[in-house]
Length: 210
Image (cartoon, rainbow, N blue to C red):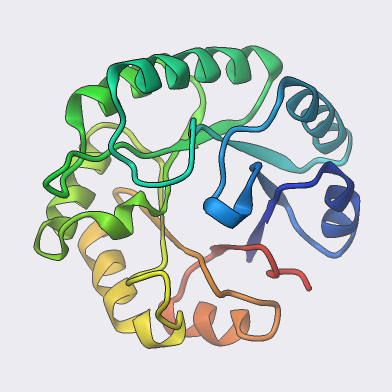
């Protein structure tokens, strides 16, 4: 089981890796769902994780709030992807939506082109896609080379265990074309049950290794 830990503080990384995290999602401002970290944090986190054989996925999100971005915000995300790629991040985590609850195909295509050569994850913006469009969204993301979808399987205030049936729907629909990575409310205590129920080999959380 690959455990991806979400951290917003560089000082937490050594402890989490020592407890078994094999990959770090590097964020700032987790209180708003995560935003892009500073240059200094990115440099030092990537350096540390490289020395300790842990992967680094860097959040690319210019602000909290919704996932509908204007042209200036997309331009910021483009610059951040170029920057993080140059620093040696293993991958980037981002998601752009339209006001009617679908993938912003133009923005995503532009960002994915810049992220070529990196692992790419569509983050929990996925859970804000219209429910009746989510399986279609899996198809679009798989066809455009996204590696993983990070999803809670339901609204943020719902329990992860109650969302297992919907997560299983995603996994069945993805059929190995793209990885469905559950996250949000996963802890070191409930991870074994979730992993066994969904037969997943990687999961994400702030408390996934205690």
